Image (cartoon, rainbow, N blue to C red; front, side, top):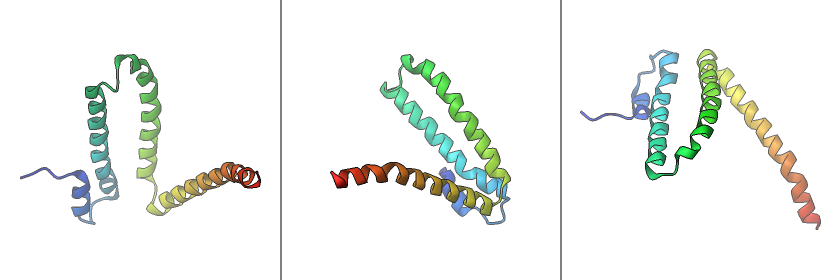
Length: 110
């Protein structure tokens, strides 16, 4: 028997799985891919000992929001999650327009 990727396992999972279980399955595969990528960087010498102090600062800065976001994601409904994502995408799009339109106007007028 061959091992299945968690993504395939999620697609094949019955709809009757609890929301908490369905939402955790994709994260299993992502964590493994991140660990594999980091191991490859270390193996190729891209990540060096000189970077260790920086990693000790960056790792908690990435892990804490990730863990908080996962807890929040597990505690809200699908509809609320979609509203949050769409709101963040809208804010991001507006910020991109606000910063790029003046530059484009100056280039067009010059």
